[in-house]
Length: 160
Image (tube, rainbow, N blue to C red; front, side, top):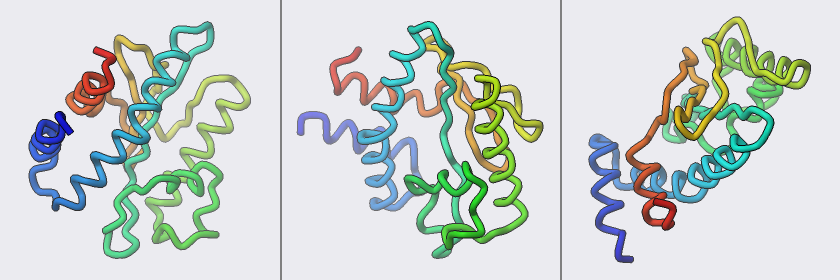
């Protein structure tokens, strides 16, 4: 637990208006999912095929928005099946994002590059730029989103 106080401080600073439960959720999400995804992307990017990183950030309004953007919420968007789930409000915004995501995934399967007219150009991920498509309304490209927490977890994991 030698890093516990530092982790709490970084997440307090990053999420100043969040409840303790929301900060805990963000901390566990980063430690259990995000760090491993970034490590996989970095290793894959060193190979011969390009890698595209994304972060699904669309917050479901279900349960008054308390769920945020939970793990696996992107699945019905990827397959444009949001009307078959109760995880969205089935709004025009949600349908548009599902159209964009399913279109980008289909384009990737067909051409090897994700793209859709409703999203900005999506550059490949590299360890230098860490370009990430943030899937939201609207979609946006960010370089190294959450850099401070990435660096924190890399240091704790002994990768820095």
